[in-house]
Length: 451
Image 1 (tube, rainbow, N blue to C red):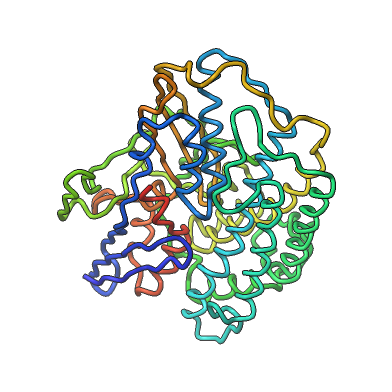
Image 2: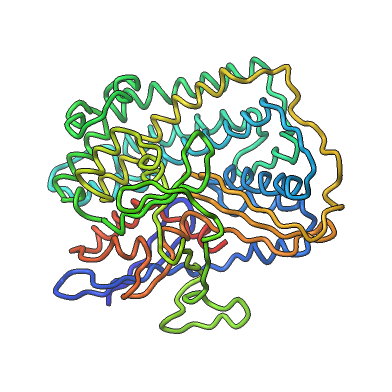
């Protein structure tokens, strides 16, 4: 048995335990040890309090939690047969905020999570990826920070924004604000073309086959070269089952089993605390080793995230890589960076659709205090994958609030006989360094996992 603390650099920490047989990983435990208790905090709170608490579940995907929360609350109105009017402008501003947040996360993830560890596996010298001091690392941090400023212009702050409310948004950006936002996105596009891709976004979006990898000349080419050198095009494979629950940002919902896409029935989602400490007794044992629950769909674990979204949405370049290299580290990382390019283009289109003359907020016809014994849920695609919220309310207060985050789907615990998604991906690896890269390819976030 070998133990290592995985310091996540941005969001919390987790502990990885590896068991070895014949110098290969035979079993793993991904332990999330910090209890946070948001689901308990929300009990008996006024419904709108969730708009303040939930964005603080995560400092990276607070927009996703906010949007899922407001959608779930608005679905309370729908389930109570109460019409709720929301302007196209408000809907776009919500979607715009989510898109900008995901862009910020994708930049940081590639340069702060993936590349520093990957270059350490290579026999060649790759300059600029050293944390906190490398030129490429610092440049990526700057562009990520500049990109997220576009959100703060109309959301008021980031992280932990709370500008979305039932009926719309509490912000009213001007034409000058929109022009400033567009300038930040344009700068992110220029950076992506010059540094990540080495080709124009238009040229990249025309990629549809594996050999198009040869056209890349930027930092993504470094990733590709090192991946083939270190066999990351074959490592990190899991069950190759994929799930997309939300249709935000134009993503298609569905699940993939044996390469076929099927509709998703949210009633088939189930959670288990079989391996989770008891919040009352904090009981620990060989079978209970963290605060992460296990989530399944129809009794099976599924991967969620950018790779899953690309496959379900049938994006050609990622589909071609997946056909050749399955759900490997190489394909998983390309799925996310391909999404970055896709979202840069999508964000530009969203900005063009905003009509500043429309209202930002249309007041609901009845108060939430009138809702009694109503249940609602909502799903949104966050940077790491599908996010699910469900609440039950009574007399205007929250009875229960359930959150299922992407990291619970991907890094949730299992057994040696029935491992979770990331646990399966770690099997057969040769070293701790390899395991670190594979684990990071899923984007570890302990604070979301132990919400």
